[in-house]
Length: 298
Image (cartoon, rainbow, N blue to C red; front, side, top):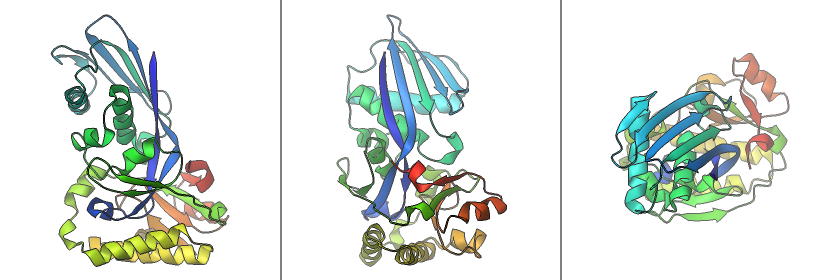
């Protein structure tokens, strides 16, 4: 049996603008996804995907020689899976010549937006021994920061560069990290749709420079006051660009601290910079998935 593991991801700065070459601060998560492959002499591949509670949420059986479908629990997911596998075979003709059983196991809730797709792309790329960024481009699309996080050992600065991105490992030594929390908004955001609807024509070099500067200031914040100020400035710039109110303005205007959207605005996790009483505040607002920084970030 072969096994492959990839980490989940969160994008702390540079959302959307990472597509235009901005420096993006990204962190791999302690939770991820494992892919197991047990080959057989058969030309039939059985695929089973399990969620974080070990419940089977997707399965399919198909013939490898023709990709003829035998059975599946979800035809739309099956079509996306086939697209990924066929692209992988195009990049490596020796890949997937034997059938068998594939199992994928998630460590985080599928609705959290931590990278069920990117960890799958990363694991399949490892399995097929191919460029994960090229595979991403030919399947889901996106900037690739999530694929970079999948095999990272810690926080990183990500700069998009075709299929060979510039990845710089960094240290985040926030002395106030016990006051940082990731809060789920009880909504799932479709990153592909968000990226597709983003009007990149509004982005100019000055805006990229501002975000790059803020990213650097956030990384090097020595006090929580500085950190919160930079987060709010970043949110303000992105809000103007997207013509949207910030998540703090919409939901948490009375929060004594800073709240920042992560990744595609409008869903999944936010970063809250407050104090040790912050979890109680968010629970009182109806948000019960609250993960401390140290428990989330690898």
